[in-house]
Image (cartoon, rainbow, N blue to C red; front, side, top):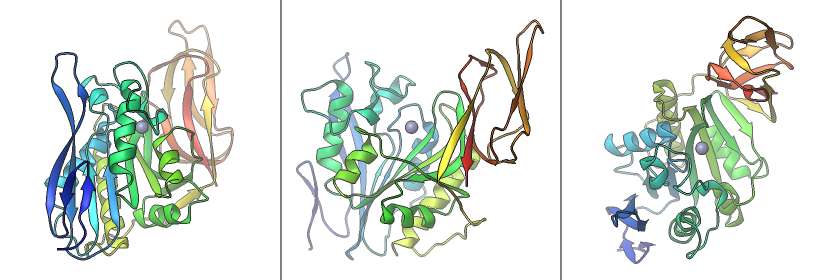
Length: 315
Ligand SMILES: [Zn+2]
């Protein structure tokens, strides 16, 4: 029969597919909130791979990517190993159209969490204790925060060679070195020696079909990388690896019109946008401060001084 995977007290044996409902906490109305975990196991041994969305509850593109991987049966009939698919980690944030849980705390800054802590801390605790011990590697699907959109990109910690391999296998146009932030999910996973890469694509609370499709293709390439599936989609371009990135910020508050977009290659001093006040008293031109690629931009038509406008990936 082989060794079971054990999540909470539930056993999933090789060759089985199951949905495990992890009970997280109650809503104020008394209704229990479950976090469904889809588990797919091949009869053959192999790595346990996590696909997860909705760590930030308003980042719907990641939720949609994992949902489609499930509904399109991509994760069934694996040649080896196992997959855990979680469309929404932060169900509370999702219900409230919010990045955070109801008390305003970010689950992604609450790891490893505590069984008796705040709601964000409890969600993180369940994840740290019930999911992280079971997996070997993972892909965490995100989008830009607020009204910022990200061009499809994969981020990983440069010290983690396994994460780098996975990021390369994912096969999107942009790869970015990204440090581990204390108390984040990725930080906790690295402490437990579980390589995680973060896929970023699109904007919060807005479907971006290109970002969704790129995420699905990347997930399929990673499945192939671990010999879990045969289907392979060639990457369209050789990935560009940025070791650093830098934000161009608004020098003044006002209305922001942009002339360049995520995915564009830019040279230093190229005109990227204009900020003006609504009464034409002033006009501020926004230039590229360095040469690189725009990996994210702000879609807000009105910005405050200091707001991030363009995120530039630097080679
Ligand atoms: Zn996020």
